[in-house]
Image (cartoon, rainbow, N blue to C red; front, side, top):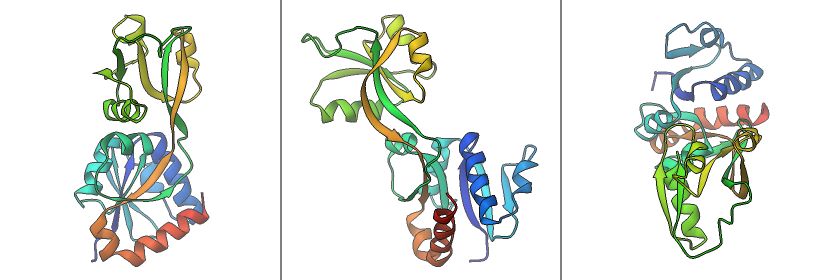
Length: 209
């Protein structure tokens, strides 16, 4: 296969952090720094090109094999699931999934079915199933913190980094659900066809994170 190893990067912070790892390896990433509006960029000093995409699309591209590998947050992996290999915990982009409610609310009390708002309905559903609790889930696209304030929901399942936004909106974390960080994922067929290339890259990445 002559085409470069194609790696989808989640635009934004994960893209910057991944590029920093590539630069520590010794690759020339000037094309990414000077990308303008380009979305497919060659990496100098390696047979690699990167594709800049939204997190959900990184998984779609890797799963369908149009990209050999990708860098995406564990949050997106948990929400979307799918068929690919998760090879490396890159250790950056750290935060956590948490259940938060209005300060002082007795979320686990009473017998009525609670309503949960989340951008991550699958993660929320899986969590409450795991603790044997029936909930109704409402998918929210924007600021989930609004849902308890507007009394749309009793609690939210969301990504929490520092907890400042929650505090400022009178909410508090009542349960930690799962730690999150960036992961290096690989297409199942690519791992067979380009095993050596991928294994060599994974070694270099592990040595430089």
